[in-house]
Length: 403
Image (cartoon, rainbow, N blue to C red; front, side, top):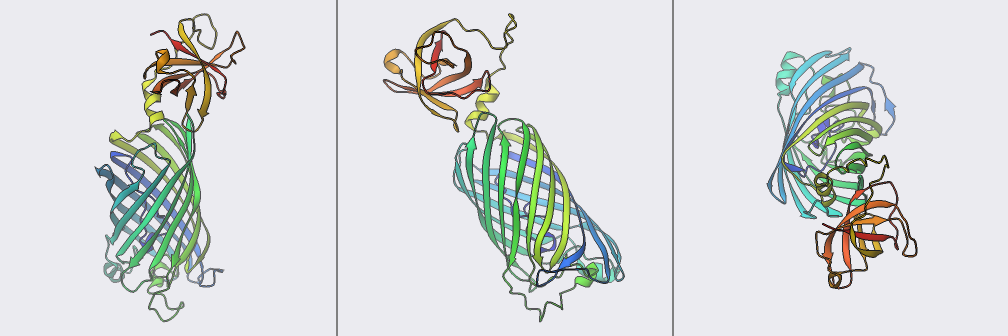
């Protein structure tokens, strides 16, 4: 899911792996195909010996929380390769590059934090032997290098509402590769649309790897061993760099269960395959799921009972106090009213919000809120339920229910 081993860096982007629950796992299947390369100038070229290189790869990803700020993650990979080429054509299957790592949350431990900063480190180790592949005249399963990657991620919540939150995720790192391969700088930029409980999800962004050009090979025309991949730069490339577009639509059935699809397209590169890949993922979270305040309230608030009179909005008649909305925070679903403890308001009391001004006699209930903090002359309410899709405005009436 987040590996940067250069043997399959076109499939795995640099991605934050901070756990979302006590223990989580997902199964992800990729299909990758290429028939041409970006050469060292960035031009698209088709090796004369290569017809196509295809890889079907399945990853079992898992992570768990060690302590609140620290998580462990891993990835086990199995892959099948089908190489069509005038040289070394054939198939190969077996384990790919395996991953283990740690991620530490430095800033923003609360799920409601509008800004987070993570420090992440991982190691990618080949689960295959290229010496065996060479002896059997089968395609290489990867570069065979051991990769050490460390970096940071920052996530910013741009907007949050009752149904969805909109975030951006930025990541950058440094990868050291063994066997004389170039070190690299992986990076990623994503925009994320995330439902509070369930609904459609969407991630879109760009990912890339920038070579540090530390490879000791004498020239770009003498790759380590890319003929084992039929001339494709999937293995053995000298100083590979890549820019890719990635889109990930999905559906969250519940905070613990999500199904996603992936599409990735190479936009530009140097010494890398010109390729695309497709993938799907089933994600399951176990144990305690890290939920924000809005998610917790949505879980706790039961759905409204239908009104027997047929009116689509419930009727309310038992109120003991009126107050006015004097301020609001749409992103956090908070409102402030002009009554407080001196009026008998205490945390936990419930108010219904009506779309009427003080001078109006009648109005329609549009939302319900719960008192979460109180001062002498004002109180803060968190909106826990909406009766209709309508914005809350300053000056609207809040009525306290008799409980």
